Image (cartoon, rainbow, N blue to C red; front, side):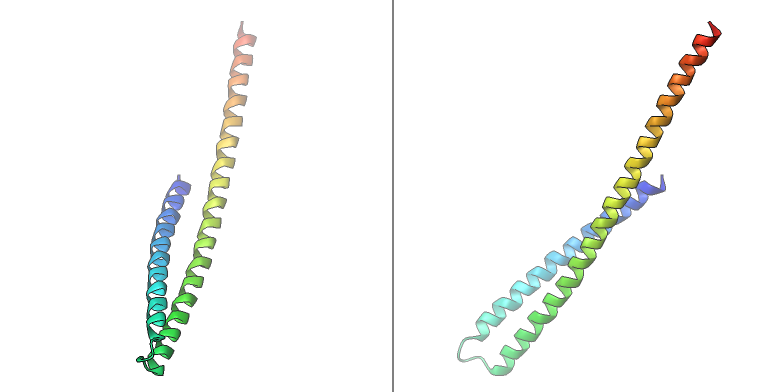
Length: 109
């Protein structure tokens, strides 16, 4: 089914985004560490401003990736629901066929 390949692709994208988010979070923590180090008196005001700017930039990237991850997660849920609906329809069709076969067999007897 094309649905299975779509789920596989979305799962792959989800993993890639999760890895990106984890890296962005690590970068953000590193920027926070820089910011904390920048509070030492020997550090210039410019270094503090740069660390603050970098941290804000990383946090912005992280928010974008979180929104994308939520979107992919919702798409995955929708695909799973569609797949389950199809499975349910096929199960109903199979049940009807089994009943019809039994009725035909009974009618032949």
